[in-house]
Amino acid sequence: MSQSTLSVLLIEDNLALARQVSRFLEGLGWQLDFADKGKQGVTLALNHHYDVIILDLNLPDCDGLTVCQQIKEQQTRLTPVLMLTARDAFEDKAKGFTQGTDDYLTKPCDLRELALRCEALARRPQLHTATTLSKGGLKLDLKASVASWQDQQLKVTKVAFQILRELVNAYPQPVARSDLVATLWNDELPESNPLKSHMYNLRKALAQQAPEVQLVTIGNIGYQLQGLDNV
Image (cartoon, rainbow, N blue to C red):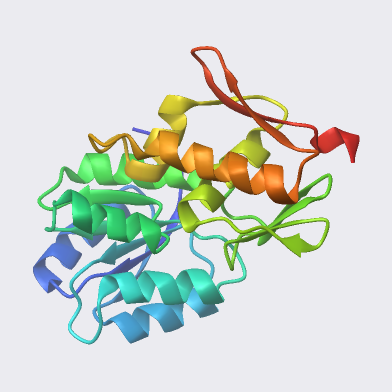
C-alpha cells in the first residue's frame, strides 16, 4: 500500500469505529480530524483543507446526505467525500451519489480498502481544483452543478451534468462507458440501464441549446464531445 500522507476528516458518531479507523490511518502517517456530529463536521470541512472526507450516513443531529450536500454547496474546493455506512441498498447509494458523494463503502469494511479508496479519491484530477470548468463556449459551475453554453444555462439533470463534467474533463478524448458507470453508480449499473436514457437527454439538451457541440458514440469505447474547439 502507498504511504502517501493524506489529511482526512472523519465524521462518524460510532466512537469505537472512529478510534479503529483513526488508529489505522494514523498508522499510515496520515493526519486526521474527527467530528461525531454533522454540524461540527460541516464546520471543520469548510474551515480546513482535507484531501478526503469520510462521512457516516447516520449521524445523531442530521442525516449524512444533508451534511454532504451542505459541504458540496459551500466549499470553495472540490474535496472528495467517501460515504461510509451500514446501508447497502442500491437506493441508498443512488441518493448518496445524487447528493455529491464521490465514493461509497459499506460497513463492516476492510480498512486497507478504505485507505486505498481514499488515496484514489485524492488522486482524481477533477477534485481539489477550482469550482468552475470551461472549454470553448461551455462552462460548468462544479459547485452549483450548473452548465451553461455561451452564458445561457443548459437544461440538464444532475446526472447529465455529471456526465458532461466527465466528458469535458477528458476532452478531446472519449470517455469509456465503464468509466461513466463507475463514476455515476460505483460499478453497479441498474438493470434498467439508465445511462442510455441520460445520454439521450443530454444529446437533446445540447442539440436544442448548443448545436455547435456534438455528443457522439465512439464504437465500443464510449462517448466523446466534439466541436468545442470551434467556438
